[in-house]
Length: 452
Image (cartoon, rainbow, N blue to C red):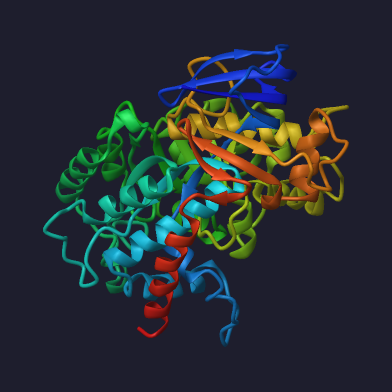
């Protein structure tokens, strides 16, 4: 058992003073506001729930900064994707584990307490399955445990190059499975996970490009109680190709034909018409927004204003992991809305705080998408918690929702003081307990990859 005492804490019912929080076995046992600290309590100025990162491709952290040179023509998501394919072919299981561990340390130091790993780098560089089908999944799990981050593992079904069941490209060979192989891969991945650690299993058909409607339905049945994540409508070309191949836009297909509901996460959902936006919001599914990656790739801007007015759920992810920041993702989401609408405080309710509106939505949507009882400081919830440094110049004198506004819009990772994931304290004074050891291994990995 451990006990935290916060001068200010954000509880489900709002901000409270002098809050005593008892942690036991990875969960929050009790929360008492309005009580004095007792001897032995660990005292903090500001405590809030940790955010859940609902979309990550861990191996792509190793290529951050390597796709920022313009080619001979226009650069788009599709040209970036070719660079990513080439890079993926160079990484060994050791490289992936070292990269994922470094990434997860960075996530924790940024205020994320858990991650949904959209894991599709399954096979050996020649495309052959490893003798242990879960070899690469085991590396992701090992990295998560080394860092202490909460994990929802999402093995990805990827079978085709594009719509219509087109054969995969040679450079996609490490991702590719047929249904029979994928069933065995999911089973093997599930055996690696330990629910007692809070680890969860879902499935992820990569996209309507990579899975036919028949395959999508088959994959969805593999984890009937777990989360189901899919990329959707990230690019205009994807929407056009979906209409040509399926006769319908991708989000409309997922809503009407695949039955997207509370179990589903639609990653990006950038290019929706008004009817899709309204209907997705009302479906109960979560929109998985990755604003920094979407900006980096030139994807476009999600229509968050309409979506939120219709009551839509969303969370944030770091996707390509080009830059890690919980506050930074929320800031980019709001700023993109401001630039397109030429307005301020677009996602705040009338008279309300933008930071609080973003934070509340993202914690709730992230918890739903990971099937993890986090995102709230309340009895029975998983103890994913962040303390903020009240001595940081940006936070001095701030109270209530102004704390979140300052963290998100005027500071960032440097404001994070301590982080607990599943009740385990993994970050102290802004630094992860294993930061140096994990970074040393990652630097050696990057030096090797640079010479490959």
